Amino acid sequence: MLSVLITIYHYNLYPLVQQLHQQCEAANIAFEILTQDDASESVHNLENEKINQLKYAQFFVLPKNVGYRENKNLLAQKAKYPWLLILDGDCLIPQEDFIQNYLNAIQEDVDGVYGGRKHPEVCPSDQQKLRWKYGKFMEDNPLDNRMKKPYESFLFNNTLIRKSIFEQVKFDASFQKYGHDDTLFSFELKRIGARLHHLDNPVVHDDIDSNEVYYQKTKGATDNLLYLYKNKKVPANYTKLLRLIHFLHATKMYYLVQFAYKFLEKPLKKNLTGSQPSLLAFNCFRLGYACQKL
Image 1 (cartoon, rainbow, N blue to C red):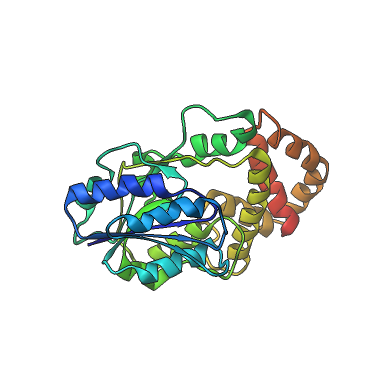
Image 2 (image 1 turned 135 degrees about the vertical axis):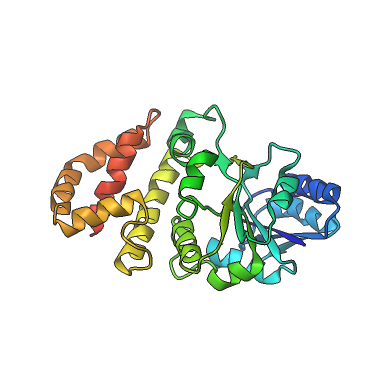
């Protein structure tokens, strides 16, 4: 009935798998838990090997690095059940009925269900505050808001989806940098008319990037968004940032942003990698960086 899929890179997955395994057994369903490391050669894999001792659970290590999108595609190919529960390995599950909540959401007229995500109430440290702030105040989308835009707010950190639907879309592994795989995947789901549902069944994002790491990752994510825009893989009005980029591009006003960004780039980086990053500065950075690449 249910294949739980978790891809990782250099992370201890065993405690999460134990918890999921207990919930699946308690639900008395046919299930499997498939996990896969993307050739990280991590010391954590000694602990992850214990996953193979759990009934209906397996841990695989890829012989070479393929990127996290293709890692998910490969793991989905191994799944034998019609429903896939796709989770990020760096999540915590706060509720004891997490699996049962998803099982209750399975209906004939539903192709996919997104349970949501939330971040810790308190930031772990000042050096993680940028990622934490962005997650807490911009990504932690409550159920009511998600239901207003079911496709645009459909992410893949905590998602139940029919295997037959996943196989029609899959993750595009042609671009390797971090970010916006959800943007393309959700648009493809919209294009094929997949029937999506949203649920208040969140996971907690546990492994929060440092400010410097997230600053650099955001550059890669913006590169990906521009790739989608320039190659017309998603409509120019699909996200807020895309709409703004498209407006500036169409009106040639992006030249003004480029000019301003030459002077603002260094102070923006100083703020964002410091102990008190501003989300306003973060949005200015993303827009300036995008216009610089147009």
